[in-house]
Length: 364
Ligand code: NAD
Image (tube, rainbow, N blue to C red):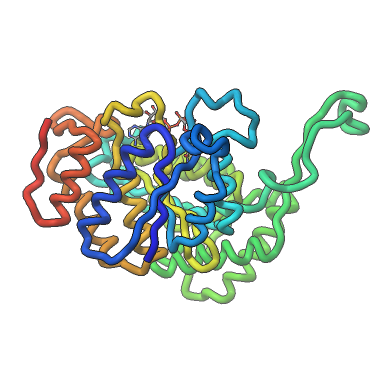
């Protein structure tokens, strides 16, 4: 097994370091190789995704990614900005399915902005299609309007489109994921208004015929946005297109109240994947040693489960994270009265100690 480690920028390097420490105490046989990506790669090689980094990611069985970006790169031309590295990796690795679990740990229910009874025990999986939709559809651009409400005015336009194979493959990912969970899929669309999403709904319904053991419901995206804050526990697997998934997965993340806890996976058709925390590079706290490494550590657990077929090792990491939370250890983003505030490294120490069966101690 070969894992490409791409820490990136800001807190990326601090949190990935802790995840690698955790992987190293699991007695698994794997090789790791680290490369620059994002702003760090731009500084060293003039490009956020250098050829050498892409080759390493392509040759590996899985990629563990930190985060990229910093405000100082905002003035660069779009193609050289750190975030382009993620788009490039998704494209070149054929990553089309983004899996984002939103799990509310019983120890952290108070961190949610919703009432504890609404989120306690929350465990949903948002599956977002990554390659199609209005984000990539052509044509797009700016022009002078020839019709519409203001002919002759300057206008901008994008194209929403989905092909049958794109919808079929993401639907299969959703139904198969549901079989490992509560066998319930909600497909989110806007079929009442958009032709693209009437097609989405039709194709998902056709694919469902191959999964009679899984329950399927369809929901309009506006209703889904409401239901996610009204009764989030009614959902199990949610599958949707690129734009709706972008928005709903952030909404679901916030239900748990702690972006520093949420892992994610982006998979290709062979289950090779890129694993990263759902948050960004947090330049405001970078270098201070206070970032929460748990989202990255849990991303490493997802990597073991989905790409490296090491479910038992993934379970060990997830149980260790539970143990650390139960012991009352918290980084600043999830800290509350009565718990112990720790830094990035101490949190990594504690997860390592929980895995190796040592007493969880802190150096606060
Ligand atoms: P962000 O997720 O980096 O930070 C948002 C807030 O959450 C900040 O206050 C930050 O301190 C806090 N935060 C985030 N992760 C945390 C952690 N692990 N522990 C504790 N607190 C944490 O989003 P942003 O501030 O909008 O963006 C910062 C940079 O990150 C930008 O350059 C943006 O483009 C980039 N970004 C990258 C990714 C990615 O690499 N996948 C994703 C989102 C944003």
